[in-house]
Length: 422
Image 1 (cartoon, one colour):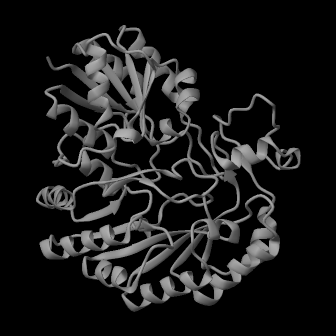
Image 2 (cartoon, one colour):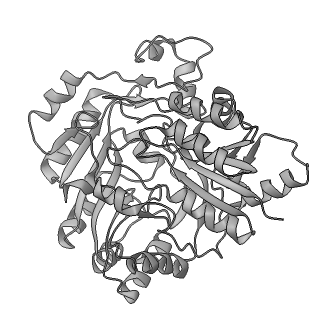
């Protein structure tokens, strides 16, 4: 017997607003198992608690799922902590004696800590479209023996065709400079020591079904897309095959993507161009230790800049500088390299948001000298749930290295993302 499930998007961050496609994917998965699912999107609500209470009183739900996209805005300048605003929503649901299931990429970063902080009942870690229906089976049969369920182990349902765009108010998002996202895979095999998604199980979707998903959205009038993958080019063969399939279907769309420096070859950029990809945001570290662990170097960065110029793709670089114990000369080397090779734009971050269960957090816990460089005093029971940043570089030092070159922007000082510049 199917359950009645309310999925709630509490994410009110609007610089820019982000369509909750994770909930849309979950709807497809749950409806496949004959559950009734409704989305309550609170992004543009002025009275989120009141709106939630109204729908809970109007309809009878068996469970409420709340997605947490981000714990905070993750940028040091103008940082916003989001979890405080979720507490009244959880309290509202609990007043109706309805179990609460948390999920989303932000929740997956620190699931135990967030479950405790919000006093929710259960949590889904990683992709939910396969594990959530299995959780519901256990819940219905009273066989629940744990609070957290790991979706990384099971992965995604490759047989799902996600026909989206009807349960979320897309026009409102686009009016506020949002963009329609899509996902080709989940997980990331990079080893960035500060990242909550590093070294997670990679699961690929079926390419023909991704194209069908895009075609369905294009038929509704949406022509501008952005990937929601951690990095698009996790597997070079898959990435090229996707581009070739998109070229063959000729849907009349344009798209932007996140990418890492490896793997790549010239054909990737050729087919990206032919599939109407117009913008790549490339994640780069100045620290050569991190470059080495992720198997790229300055020669790769030079080649990528050249390929983007050759195939008329704008290249925006998200640059992280000043990892613990990185010397200033290493940072200067990267800044000088970018001044000479000149992508379209460079966003610089030099304050590292510290997340528990990452190598960066472990490094800081073991080194009192690094603890002195945190944005607030460190205590032995610190769980890094509320925003704490590490930096050994000052804004003045970074600005001196940039030397008023307008290629560079300090991330977070001016709100916005790369696709908004086009």
